[in-house]
Length: 83
Image (cartoon, rainbow, N blue to C red; front, side):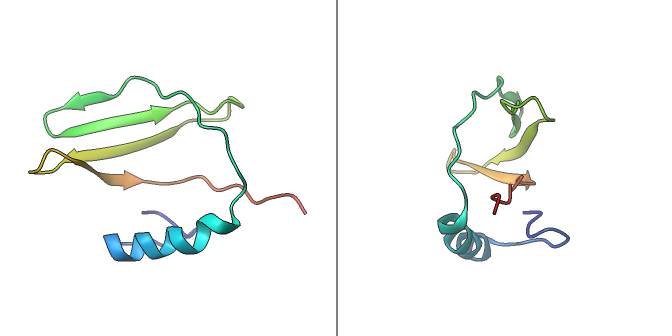
């Protein structure tokens, strides 16, 4: 995962720790309606247009042998709350 800025967080345990530390300090957000998922074999692209019209969010996921999907590429967008 391309976070924190300028670095990567790699591996399930490291990503779980990052979210456990970050989520309690993040502002609340309203889920946005995703666009249709594009699937090609065992890869899929998911995307969501932000409600404010600024850019887009995208993730690439890969189907696992058990049928679940795990992210291959994810670059989250974090907003710093106003002070």
